[in-house]
Image (cartoon, rainbow, N blue to C red):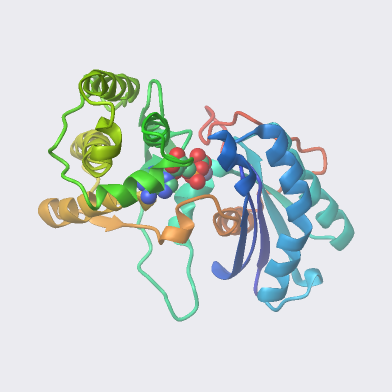
Length: 346
Ligand code: KG4
Ligand code: ZN
């Protein structure tokens, strides 16, 4: 008998719903919120309001596109955290209401866990090789930068993480300094393709072990611009492609350096990337060349599964369903929620 999961994602500024049947994606609808663009970042209150407006049409479209009836849904999986509380509340309350009215089971999902397990999504006619345990995951998003060892779907150990800014934040903050629109990561990526990555040098951190730091890079970037602008007021406008290419190369170098150390330290050569920054072309190219050079098996998620989406919540819900890991109606959203709390499975 097949298992149908309705996934709901509302942790930040994307309202998304997806239907997953037996690990296969049937639909994945994402409504992105343009309203934040003019503020240069996500405004929590506006995000909650937009989720409230979007959630019903988004779920309705996901169910129709999957060509199922809502009574066929065995469980509704929703993002419980981490994220913006008001945004999480919309998805959580919707999921509870849906479960109550249809009799579907309720499954709470950790957003970061879901980013990692997005690598297990399958599509009919486009089957791919899935990651094999144990593997290393470089999780790079707007809020997190971590190296995680996965021994099975629910056994995770964070072996390295940022001590300050996340990689996505470094992209976004430096883009803002250059006057580029939010979110800056994809814009930097686009300009970088036209630029010379050796044009400028920015400082790299010196952090022991497998941890990351990006705050020094941000400062170094800011100081370079400040000094050059004193000589030429048009410095930024004239050098956008080279600045973007050099910034991207520095971030990719920092990410890859610790990932290589993690592989050497653990002996694990099966490697996946996940999270919004996993869409970055420089990072993807570096992963592919390293795979060839070091004999790694690398899994790169499709672009549409790198940034926030409900398909990743649905696939995580599917694995939790198989294990009987259900939530109850008294479950509350958690703005801060590590995927690996000591002794607790996500
Ligand atoms: O995973 P995500 O959608 O949301 C969080 O959970 O944080 O990640 C969003 C982050 C943003 O910082 C955005 O700038 C970055 O991912 N991002 C990229 C690219 N696409 C999205 N960064 C670099 N290159 C990209 N192509
Ligand atoms: Zn995310």
